[in-house]
Image (cartoon, rainbow, N blue to C red):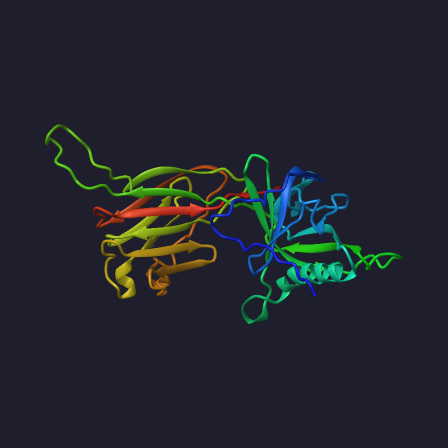
Length: 326
């Protein structure tokens, strides 16, 4: 029985699948691809393919839904006490077809497996989300993690289920925000020292030890990842607008100061500190005062401080902007 095959995602592959964009409700013209937990790409807007999205009926691609908690105000009205973004639900109608019944059946089964495997392909049989990717004609793209919830049933009407049928899928998004496929990186590196007066006045780079401004072009806060390259004996990162900071002391882990070329990575959500060999360095943070802070939308003043820095010392801050809509 013939089976569907599709190219596997590679880091060099650009967003989209080369198909022209079509108009989709709530987002306009776009090329949409579903990426299953194995990394296989399934074009969703190629009208010449054996499966594609039925634009009529698509929903859930707009702004996230929120629960707003309020308290009555003594003078009338209310005051907002808390705002909580809720999980997103995407409704995704799909048409599947084939030149004959066997081809249709193969396509139907393969696409159903690509979505339903999100329920069990993770570690220990836990859900392993797939990805819905929306690529724009200008080359930009945003993604959202999805888990199949319901709907791969078929219409159950006369003439369906022979060479074609359609299903209306319900996809659950634990994180309701869309994520830019292109990570943003801020790199700061210690330059080599120079004699100030020889052969003429000069100043060496020392950006890794000082203040800078980080711009988050997204709609909501992001939780960055930090990669520090030695030498460094003490590492402190401060968000100047709030005063929040965290300090990593390599000596508190039993390792000693970072030597030239050695690296440690700090993740802020979930909190994680890993030396280059995977060793857990979470105990090196200055608990309980450490705050692994986030970056709000817009510009944020931050300070990178590496005690014991020298030539080769570097900091790489990386994040993917997050957005309300596709």
